[in-house]
Image 1 (spheres, helix red, strand yellow):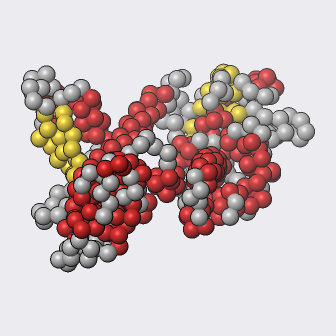
Image 2 (tube, one colour):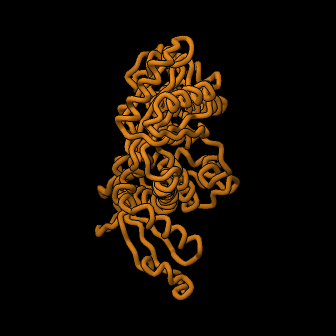
Image 3 (cartoon, one colour):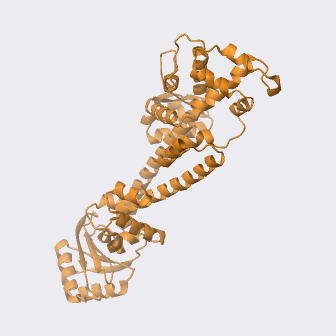
Length: 438
């Protein structure tokens, strides 16, 4: 399924609509422009659909570019078999793609790589596949001082490093552990030694614990700020009472490892223990703390935006009923009336200019709306046809002095962007994007 078909399926629209929108976006058109002036080209896609389409288009293109890079890298290593290629092509997210690539990603020379170069991969594979084997006996066969394997202990250490890296880079296991950790881990905080006085403002978090997926945004940001200031020490782990960590149990179960009294069972479970403690615990902790921070920052931005919105939406002309006119020629002049509190009362579209020239009808419509809603001020956008629309309102005021109207020309900067924004769609879900601009 190509990108166009995938987006069409996700948005439940026709591929032709998606293709038209993508062409316009690639030509430099913006979502507000397409939503307002290119409805015929997209066969009626609204601003919400276009916004979702643009976001998915960017994500899926980035995903495909990264996929192509990864496929090329693994192919150059000679390790791209049909099964791996199919998995990479089927990966639906960047996280899944990177998890699959992890075992093949070029990295600095690790202990596991050194062990492979010393010829210890067969030892690791043999013990994993057949736990009946005695680790000490098997390891003795790989002693080679010329390769840096001085004794059986060194051979087993190398085999352990190979399996730890193999376990820690298993894409399916990583995905399972990541979500389990997110849903069950507790974020803890303690005060750093000697920082009690200096960090008094963080005293609420000197001895703190809460489920990471329940931490509210303001609390998360305070915790991260305290850590950055050197006042707080943060920890992340799953509470448990059994002898084995729940994540270790999941690793062992994933590779079908359990203590059945066989010769290699204890050694393999020790590998599992080291994999969790050395490789995965810290890695997942960093990832989930980053996820929490990103979510908290997004929530904080939303709060700030809402507070700023209240300030910006305060009536600049005072509490009075206003009529907004968004000038246009072919598409008409969009009209919206709000009351003294900013509540939307009425909308309309009039066509005073070419090609319809409904001048008198437009004045009659405006007069009727102004009288009905006791409008005091008419606000005219300064875009296309602004001067012509200003003349229309001047004629309205001359013909209907009893309305006692005032008029003003205002900047349209941001009006089109707002009208096709997600915020506008939430505020006026039933209103056409062109009328939101008025």
